[in-house]
Amino acid sequence: MDFCQEFITTIHDLDADLDYLEKRLMNLREICPMALLIPSLYEELQRPALTRIKEHLKGCAYIQTVNVCLHAETVEQYHHAVMFFSELPQKVNVIWTNGARIRGILEKLAHQNLNLLDYMGKGWAVWLGLGLASLDARAIALHDADIVTFDRSLVAKLFYPIVEPEFGIAYNKAYYTRLGLENRAMNGRVVRLFVAPLLATLEDVLGRNAYLHYLKSYRYPLAGEFAMTADLALNLRVPCDWGIEVGLLAEVYRNVAPKRVAQVDLGFFDHKHKAVGNNPQEGLQKMCTEILSSILRTLTETESIVFSEGHQIALQVKFRRVAQDMIRQYFVDATCNGIPYDRHREEMTVESFEQIIPLAFDKYMHEPAVYRIPDWTRALAVMPDLREQLMAAVEADMAEVQLEATMQRSEIPPLEMV
Image 1 (cartoon, rainbow, N blue to C red):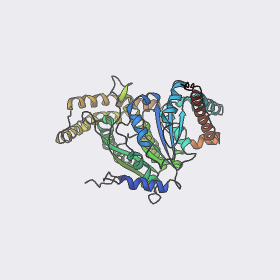
Image 2: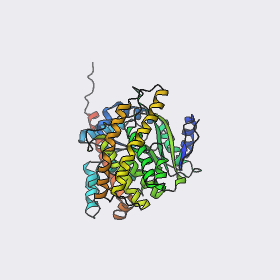
Image 3: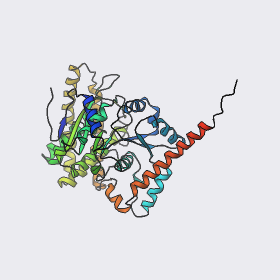
Image 4: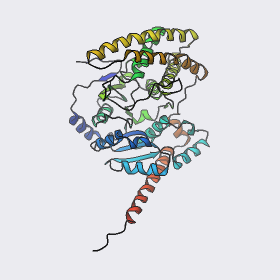
């Protein structure tokens, strides 16, 4: 049985009692209100995963607020989303992240020399949702909208380490086993075939340093599920590129002592997958470019490491050998568990990932300043009531939907008397 602890606290899945966790969360909800954040494109409403998530969230009575940060192209799409989530018993804020009211407030902020309109994307949705959740909540959890294996234990495991006052945890990150539901294939290619060998190679090339030691302690650093205190949420510079997950870990490293960081095992996990891509501007190759660029910048920022062309060459040469050694280990692990494993395809994926290393170095050299959204404390210094204005816009957007639904019901003609 695995009791191994990392540099950060590791919470294992030892058949935890979900009833106990939920009862404890109910007892703590008054002193530590909880808000759940779900970033979502409108397209996710058409897929079964989000319907499953909605049904399981109905049983999470300890959550006071659910903030859905929605990107919708039309008023009709936004209206449909509001009605979709109206079944939840919690207070629900469907935040139309690219809606006219939200944009109007941001334009006022831009006139005061803080332009947040250039950051639209998932990172922007996360930043917006964290700020609005912090109005009422002391603990905030986030998960994606495409988790096909979702059940309500996921949010309980994310929230509990944050809200239990005896723990002193400020940030809790998920980790899990990425095993495909249909074919039992090993998923999580970016972590297995890029991030894991990359961190091992960087440590070989650079020697041991504090930030790499911290990153390597996360069992699944690219997990998009986490929970944090509201205070921390207001002090994070959220990345707005494809390196959002590893970029957030860098922000946690800057703001939180390691003893206040934890990771929790969520068991088996599956969601929709991206293609590797045919070139470095597509799919997982693009993601890997952003991840490596982010790590290089953070190593310079936090550890004062100045990279050279020699570092790039050494990293590229050693990366393939380390990744190939890991592929042999994955093959043994998979075979002993009766899991199909295509070694040739894995090798080709590593070769594709290897080619982005010089591109990531070039990006780092030419764009040394990291592309992150200013933290909420800066935005509030410019406009102290920004969160209240944005929440008023959300409430106005939702009120229009509710008014329209009421009018439609009143227009239904009565049944004729027989």
